[in-house]
Length: 227
Image (cartoon, rainbow, N blue to C red; front, side, top):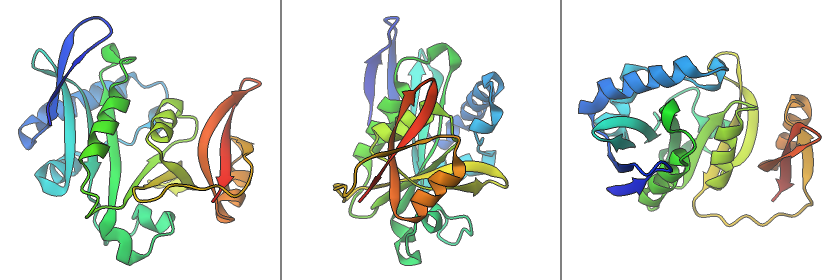
């Protein structure tokens, strides 16, 4: 799973799997990215132990290297089925289905190399590698108004299935993609202001899902549809 890519500035990078031996580089890049964020609550950093869990066989991570330096990475993780905070619970899955769930985990891109669609490219490469005989659902969380991350998840075909507090008291969208489904919608779109938490939760509880977003009158609205 190796690939070369040309950045907008003409530099050539290599995309390849990341292993446990790159853990220090991963942590260093995560800290660099986190320190530049204007809204720190948008990112839930992973601990060294969580990265080791992924790299130790409970997930897969792809890295982007420029002249041997890690400039971006993206991971998918096989969650603990016994986790009380399992996203499958939020998505309405049964516990029997938890073994078929993967998390679309953290993505970090060095600030100097943003704007090259590295997050999207890594996401599509990871999706293409998923064993669909073993896994059916991809789940993740995104903070409201984290526009870049929401665009990425919608581009990968994920839907908002819940909106609630996670990681303590942090409000998060829970998004899911069913790898076997081809959505057929039964109702016209409804657009809700992204900041209107209560109205969005009402629709989600009635079986609607968030499928996209638009900017209207200088405000972001989430597009909801019903299967």
